[in-house]
Amino acid sequence: RKQHSASEFDAIVIGAGFSGLYMLYRLRELGLSTRVYEAGEGVGGTWYWNRYPGARCDTPSIHYSYSFSPDLEQEWEWPEKYPTQPEILRYLNHVADRFDLRRDIQFSTRVISAVYDNSTNRWTIQTHQGDQASARYCITAIGCLSAPNTPTFQGLDSFQGQVHHTARWPSEGVDFTGKQVGIIGTGSTGIQAIPQIVKQADHVTVFQRTPNYSIPARNRPLTSEEKASVKANYRKLRQTDRESPAGITLNFHRQSALEVTPEERQKKFDEAWAVGGTQMLSTFSDLDTNLEANTYLADFVRSKIATIVHNSERAKLLMPHDHPIGSKRICVDTEYYETYNRENVSLVDVRISPIEAITPTGLRTHNGEYKLDMIVFATGFDAMTGSLFKIDIRGKDGQALKEKWAGGPRTYLGLMTAGFPNLFIITGPGSPSVLSNMVVSIEQHVEWITDCMKYMLEHNFARLEPHVEAEASWVAHVNEVAHLTLYPLANSWYLGANIPGKLRVFMPYVGGVGNYRKKCQEIAEKGYEGFAFC
Ligand code: NA7
Image (cartoon, rainbow, N blue to C red; front, side, top):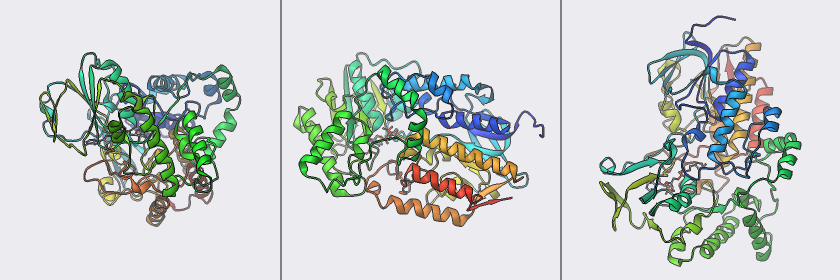
């Protein structure tokens, strides 16, 4: 093989989280020289940055792990049903060491641009330190919830206390002892962090814009019998995860919520509530497609809020009414609603009393000022396109990705976009990733990309990009299936609705992980139908 100089590689991977680590592993197997650039000081991606108190994955640990190495599966022990952030970070560090991945990763390096040159068929990346490197392939493994969203409140710079965003949490932690803390945001993150922060702080004021539906996690240690059974059955479990709609083996019920008596419905909901977690949404077959069925479940969760929260006015403020349950990412909590029975928590509905400004000593809403020592932003992310647009990505003839996607993201299978040859996107818009068990989707993406590169090597192809027509029909398909569901009825980050001025386009593919995998496979088997090689 051709010898490259220090800054010339066969492949450049941006990001060293779940995606980047596995991509590197596979590229090495293909014999491709690879450099991974990672902005953090260590591996982990999402699990490196999101260190806020209570951070935990809402997919059970036995499903939220790599399947590519049976030895790794056998040697790693997950202590609890749901893994904590430190536990997942430990796991990813273990993976990096076990497969000797660090030697190809350059840490503390943020890629600021990636530019394709038509004449050389190479991508050149530039880092914030001014490093430059080039490669035939460029693979973004930058995550789809990794560009934090901090609303631009007037006066934010004048605040004299500490300000933290949950997605940029200091590694040394934050001491809330004796503090008056304001938390803005009640999505999955706020719902995890609030019950933890109130235990330490003197007082917490939660500024809620949209109440969310949250299901108890019912987290617990895994028993030794459970651990042994999973280890004995991993192959089967992985297979069913891969073929399932959401990348996780659940008991999907085929029955409509409208076919059963109110008593039967209540019984099913009670049982699912007792088990906890996101599988609440699979108790009936039509909860995500039929508004009447969905309303039964939404009513059930509202009734639970009314039971748990003692103050009825507060309970009402916490009840979501503006969107169907599941049309925004469902939250999974540990004692979230119970937290509102504490003395040291206040709840402010910022739709009734909008935030007007941050002041030097606190936060002012329409109804008055709240004195605060600290403000925590749990305000989420510029999802899916935000992380890609932070890098100046330019394809053929200097076209910017941001320009090409001005009318919404356009991909073929979520993996590539026309006019940007040899640029692969992991967990991109148009893929089912954010609606699934991420690790299952990531492994599928990485394996598909690896197979595609292998095909190129075998056929002596140097360049690949999707046909515009194939891309257009995929974009139409993504849109069409989204509109068969209740998802478009919510102002969610799936639609970009959380970011002021962002175009409202439903970005993920809701057709299901199993179906998507089949489609990707069929396309590969037909000699990568819809792609042009040369
Ligand atoms: P989310 O789910 O986007 O939640 C962000 C929260 O912040 C949500 O309650 C927002 O209210 C609120 N928010 C955002 N901007 C503002 C402003 N300007 N004023 C007041 N409140 C605001 O992010 P998370 O980090 O919780 O979770 C993201 C994903 O990570 C999650 O879905 C899992 O997949 C993992 P809104 O609902 O927009 O009215």
